[in-house]
Length: 381
Ligand SMILES: C[S@@+](CC[C@H](N)C(=O)[O-])C[C@H]1O[C@@H](n2cnc3c(N)ncnc32)[C@H](O)[C@@H]1O
Image 1 (cartoon, rainbow, N blue to C red):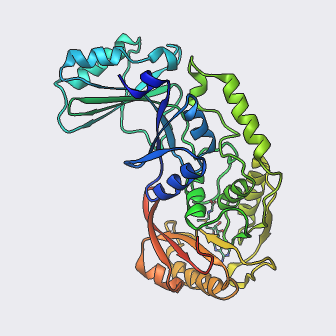
Image 2 (cartoon, protein in one colour):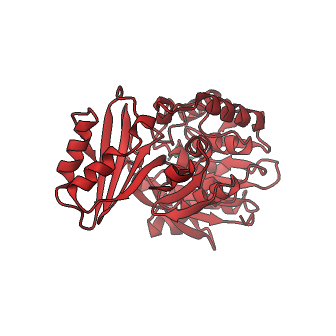
Image 3 (tube, rainbow, N blue to C red):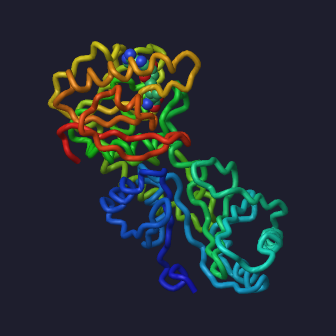
């Protein structure tokens, strides 16, 4: 019998993007969620509805899984019995499609695929999509069960998020090479941004850093504008959910606690940023400007954060070293007193062109590409 059955407590696994684990842990700590580290994320135990809290509030979470059961099954029959004993009726009404994502570690009981397939048929589901591990992918409509076999030990969880959590619901248009919202939120946190100092993005594109920064500064949870898979669970407690949302709404501030400004050379990108901000319900100061001639705003120093082009598009690559040198000159000049956070490709020559002395380098991934998060400047986190 697992912890859930014994105490009514929930166990959830929260995944994040590679490199953002410390940011997710810091968020969990801040929300008072007891957790332990797990591969690619954290595992938390807490009262019923913990999965709702995690989905609603954690800015760096990619996905939240609710543990349905863990059991030991040395034989195929035991596996079937274990699967059939799961509290499926809590999470699945038999009306929406059910997918199964199976991960097998080490050697498992013989014929697991056949066994799993027959279990799925028993749950009235004819097609078992043995999808790979769900992370940032959109699983499509319906519910996803995640079955993990490790030797004789089996763990079954249900995905409570649905569409991946970087889909906040405000960004219906993207610029060129937009950043995932979860990555932007993680970078802000790793840079020590707590929402109480000015924030500037000199190459803001569709405005991801700015909207995420505004929400963080306003203490507005990232999940207020979207729906989640758990809302289709038969056990869904709609009153508790309404209470959670109302509490979050009451805690949120109407305005960011310090100015948030974005600049870009491209007028079209600024239009996209403006519309995204409107949908997100935030006010941003946006202005068309070339970073080469950008002056720091008259605010007290804060955080300057940027995601410069990576040169993956035709005709872009040859201009990059010059652009990176210009960015470095602006950051080391006009923004000398500011803390800096840049996400750049892992290319030593480009990094050197920036000339950011003494920058800390953290490994992160952006859309599958190995990148570096460079942190420099005086506002130590
Ligand atoms: C990778 S995109 C930023 C994407 C952004 N983080 C987002 O989430 O949408 C890089 C941006 O730099 C802008 N840019 C390129 N050269 C610039 C310059 N000299 N001054 C200001 N912005 C520039 C581009 O127009 C583009 O919007």
